Amino acid sequence: MHTSNLREKATTLRAGDRVLLSGIVYTSRDAAHKRIFDLLDNGKALPYPLDDAVIYYSGATPAPTGLPIGSCGPTTSSRMDVYAPRLYDLGVVVTIGKGERSPEVIDAIRKNNAVYLCAIGGAGALSAKSVVSCEVIAFEDLGCEAVKRIEIKSFPLIVGIDCNGGNVFRRSE
Image (cartoon, rainbow, N blue to C red; front, side, top):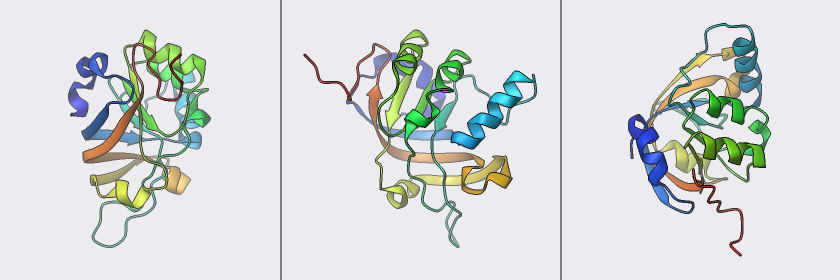
């Protein structure tokens, strides 16, 4: 599956589906989200377009010689739950991370026909093997938490929450 057609594919994905994702994603974590919201609140330009964006909650480490990136595993998504509903409302189609999401995020995913994908925690070096290129595009002073534009190829993910409210973190009754 490619990031360029995720908006149309999002409605076909179901919780528990396995996905190999390719294309462009943007890394943003806590500190970057705070700065992005300051930019939004002040009507300033954002480091990347939100419409149909894929945001990966990752603080990728510096690249070793000859590689595009160091370790790039997911961070705990719930830390971004205060930000996620507004970002989904502004056009984000996918967030990628690990762990459960709040009811407000689940509602935003459903309302916006979006999806939440889960990456494998603790496997940052393995995840890095799917990264084709990496470029710091904003907030370089944040180090590992700087916003990066990364190109991925066949990045292994699991649909955690689908646009119908299906949720791998909830037991079916």
